[in-house]
Length: 535
Image (cartoon, rainbow, N blue to C red; front, side):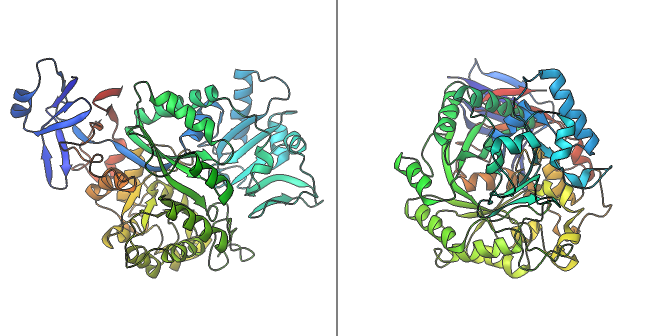
């Protein structure tokens, strides 16, 4: 039997309840209480960890991200945080100088956002990429993952011409001469990204390990991650199982992305559905998309964009197709979560769920991911049908700079309504959508509590009526995320019988001024009663 005692800590049990020490045995919390009683109860061979007064919270549980893409990002051209086209070029060229890819190698990167560019606030075009990496086929995805830019050699390699018809629910932009300008949107992304070489199971494992190491550094002990996609899911499942078989460092609840019945039926026929697996690798919900992103103006709106009346965004599924997939999942015992950002997309999803949810009972725990652009009647529909909201407060860091321009001030005032969702009794969980944003829970909590960007702006917070209490924010990141995966009785609290997944923080986030939360560091991460990271 392996045992661990953490003492001299400020142990967060639940709102208004703190203890001093925790005893963990064989990966499970067996006792929580005063230093003296826990130390007296501990086995003689237990490891003793003096927290020196620091705060101990349940391990953070990211309710929606893309772990494989995080690993890809770490292994490829890293563009997150680039503040200019010139900076993107510098990072691309630095990558080439460091790795010396052979001529013809397909280069890949993700993370750029034109709204952060100080030189020219515009999308990247193929000519930009041609200039950055002459002769190389290269694909650079925008941070949101709903737009990519391909270089001229990449477009040619993909066989895309002026006559190529975009996939339904997608778009291929053309220049003034009617030729592809390099920009691919939504369901058309695959018409360019098809040139990226298929990775082996070993390649996937290597990238997942990079992502898992980053998760441990961030204090993330559980991830609900969308890595399974139609056409490559068997390799992904094998890679995860291989890794998790040997002292895993993060628990994985896999969100499986299928957009049409045939591929999903094959997945179901192989014996996979929500709940299949063990405590370290388990199949979660069916994950679908019905729109794009606000920054790319592909999020589906009920009315035209305030700053571009020519578009309402791009729907990526039909109502009939969506209904069919939800029915298929529900009848086969699967939960469903769907990416919906614009109010048109969220309305579409609420309507679809209301067709199968009766009397406000949602036993499959179907949910909506992102839930950004909303009005009050829409929020009340969440509560009435007990539909889960998987949200990302960190999105405020960027989105507050464009929100009012995109949707107008009236709709902006009722959007990103995190505290209203909580007050209405909606099961609301926190994630980062990493690598769209970094996996860092501290920044996420800061944005939820202050409604400020990571520069501390605006001074009073962005629509501050929606600021959350720090206790509610932590619970959304731990207990409520566990609720999404039907694990609220074993995960998300520091109580006897729960998994020994915990995080030591450098500051007491429950008492320091909210503006100081951002300075908090993860000092240690414990998974299954084992230290997987120490700063």
